[in-house]
Amino acid sequence: MQIIRYWLYCNMAELKRPKNLKPRLFQILAFLLGLMLSLLVGLGILRYYHNQKAPRFFGNYVVEGFVPHPYLGYAPTANAKLHSCKTINNDTVYCVQYTLDANGQRVVPVNDTASKHVLFFGCSFTYGEGVNDEETFAYRLGTQRADLQIHNYAYSGYGPQQMLAKLEYGRLHQYVTEPDGYLVYVLLPEHVYRASGEPYYIQGWGSSSPHYAFDADTLKYYESHMAWRPAYTSWHRFLGWSGLGSIFTQLPSVYEQTDINLTVAICVKAKEQYLSRFPNGRFVVAMFPVEQSEVEVGQIMASLKDAGIEVWDLHTDLRMADRYTIPNDNHPSSEAHKEIARLLSKLIK
Image (cartoon, rainbow, N blue to C red; front, side):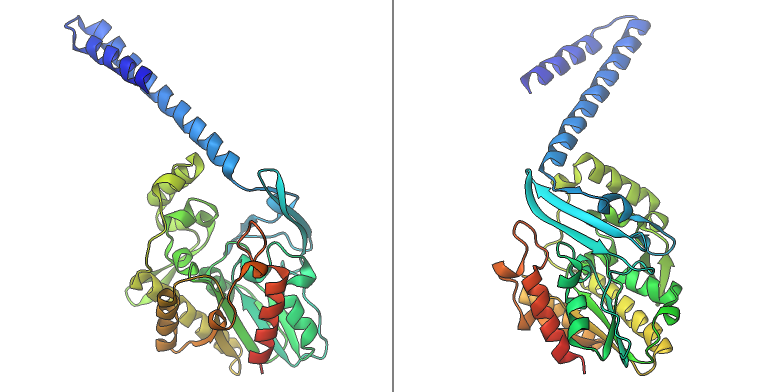
């Protein structure tokens, strides 16, 4: 640091000396070039240390698990077996396999005698990141209830906006043949940030995700955050790439009611879309049992209920103790998926 200060002092002193114009211009350009090179070197060092601390993923999940999708932003490759190993400081956190069907959904039991469907939407917690196919709560529920055909539309990094986009632009009626049943969106409080487009989300994987924004009293669909706010998103993508985002960007300490209102509006519109196809169905938001402030969870649930959304409070029934999370990872363990399947089986009539 002292060397940099001395270099700046010497250059600024040179710039102040009265000389003819050409040498002065040369010195200014040299100063600016040196400053730019110093910034680039600093960013390179920061990015290196940022990447060193980040978890590492191995397997074809990294490549085939995040391919561009026309209205969801990204999705996994259909008809694939994705292998994923996560390590931190060369220590293995998990090594698992994700099997996907022809529709890009994670495999679940096929129940030919099922009279009802259950459509799950949500993020990696519902998809089952970190556990094998037969360990997810969606798969377990399918083995416990032969009267239900499960469809798992959740995926890593998704939020409520992908649920609504799937209902608006997907062809669920071609894949879901049971006349009635349930749509269950498994909500983590953090999904409020994904719906509103908080900086931490668009600095990483979320910039390609679809976005819904209020246009007067209606929701307007944007194919990506880049399409919604290109300059703002580009800036935050740079912060995420450089590693500066992890230093200067912090999650808000409280959930803004305006952001909660947007999440609720997305759920309300998703409910309308679902019931227009399945009039006898039930649209439910299940609050996932994460370690979160009771005030924050209560605030979100109250807003959903006020808007006429049915809420299942899994947060109260199950707390994520150590045995319910994967060691060195915040995703639910196989034991947690087992307990969630048990709770859902009691709630689904």
